[in-house]
Image (cartoon, rainbow, N blue to C red):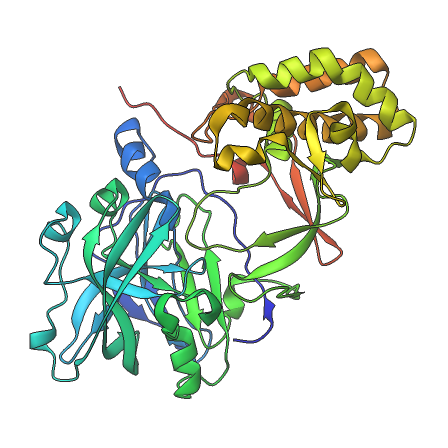
Length: 450
């Protein structure tokens, strides 16, 4: 759908669940859904954590030529809507995921997965437009996998009928996410390059069948915890009611995911160093999280006072090699060569690589792999502090503190909500513009209910 992508997404901190949605048309041709919201509790957090790998969004259109798919917002971690498969349509709740490209739903031939017994199943015998395919396939996601076989049938998306769409009938779903998730399947919105079995994504089929006036889809998420509407997704345009001014476009740098080049990530206006010369990033509607390199996440955790685990390897590197790294950087040693010259990493001609590469066939070098990673992070931190003209003592103290803020193995850290007003803003440099996120837009808020 073109070579440019605009997606304004901020992570939500209030929990949302939904009642049966009420559809309402307005004079501007938009379809609106009323949603009920509730605060995120410890009980609901368990379901949200299991499902947030697939946090989609909500659809709508800004004009009569755009198509609307109503979406429901669950805990601000899953945004899902209903599509129809077959003739007559069999309804399924799906996540709209820009991080994958296939459409799949549970199959009536799924017998050995618990998730299939908790969600509706597609029955090809009940559709007059079904066409058999039978090719076996498997998709692995961030927190689970599905396997099954391909079939072809019509797909109803909003008011549009996408004919003869190739999709997957899932016969096995191997993740608790699919059991706890409020969705039945996933509708991928990524490029065909990453589509399993070379199945065309639904948006591409829309484009080829000339179903849309404009080859665009757009998302809007509502951060107002008191609002009834949780957000919108529009096929065929953008809704002018949900933005002011002009959009900022960034070219797609690599087809597959919606990948683009971004600049630095700033904490309270100060560079984190790692992406100062640019980084590749993707926009993924299938997750509710902001993810990044550990070297940056540790700095963010330190800045906001988040509690993580202490990395022994990291502290050991700072203790034994911190001053050496500092002196080498002052002596203008290329940062990517520092760890290899110390002996903790190898150098492949462009960057340091772990001594533990032999652990592919033998596990004896895994420790050196961790030391190499810790060294690379320490170089980023120390170099960044040198730019701030800090003293040696303060630089090493800062690096040691960052070691303590490394995230836990499952990537989660906690922070006191009472300190939120004191936390710094985060800013992303994209397309030569800076986009600022406040602490309220970055953190999940967990409420205790007695």
